[in-house]
Image (tube, rainbow, N blue to C red; front, side, top):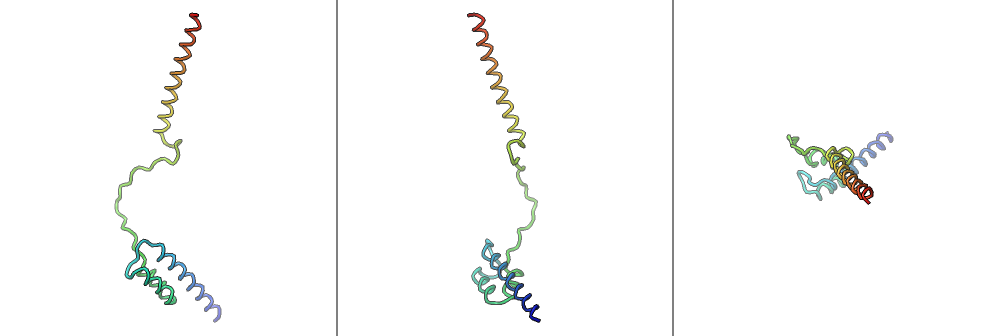
Length: 111
């Protein structure tokens, strides 16, 4: 019989902690003001937390067909647009460097 009481006390404590965390971290609560839910959870054993979980927790938002923007790559290496811009920038610099080397080579041949 003592084991049953210990088990129920543990369940009560877990429900109390979870309900307090839920009521204090939720943006909104239903049915009653937040302060009343906290008092009910603290002073009405087992029924306070159970009542909050049944009637006080906010309802999840309805799942509507929400158009989300396309997911951006998580790193630059995964972004083909970024890789294209790096490649074109590098190619431009390479062409400029090659042109500079050709000009320097032509100057050295003439002089």
